[in-house]
Length: 243
Image (cartoon, rainbow, N blue to C red; front, top):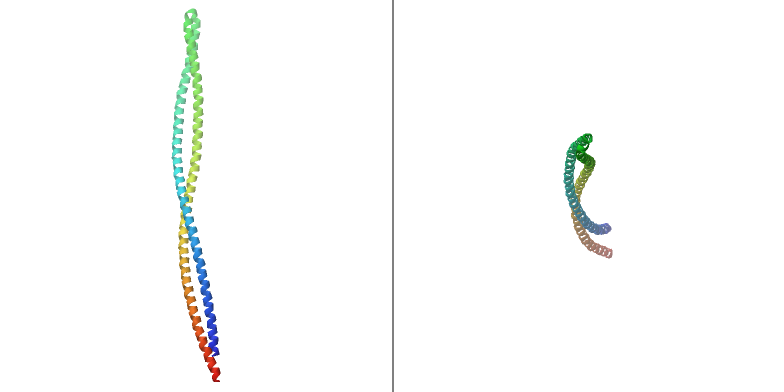
């Protein structure tokens, strides 16, 4: 009888242990469920942020591409300006040469008019006017040449700046591409994490169910052990009376 009583005692202790373990498992499952819920909310927020970042980078990329197109057009305009300036420069050189020749002819005509005396006086006035006009033409040609040289210099400087900007824009495009790649990788990892969290949630639910079943079984076992203990006590009492 003592062995049975001792066995009942151990069984009762085991039952209590199972009950406590079941309650602890149930609490852990509840905690896991809360963590899963919070993690899911955080992931959803991160997902929104990544999608927002992807949208912003896409818009920036479109603007960058527009800038690239504008820069190419500006480079072409500068090239056209340089070509036109070179053409004008060539024409201006011709005008300058003609003005120099005209000035020389006017000087020669003035000398001849001076030799002619009174007869060449009227011609001398005309040649002087021609000489002055040739001189003004030469001065204007010089001014134009300087302006053209300045325009060419500015066009070349602008082309160099455009080249640098184009390089920076290319780097920006590359950076945007890297951001998109990182965003896609984060999205993939988030989806994988969501899958793992879903598994944890399922496991937690299963654990909670098992804990509830264990607790119920433990209570049932405790009830059976109480009945068994009562029966054993009755037997022990009867045995004592008979002795």
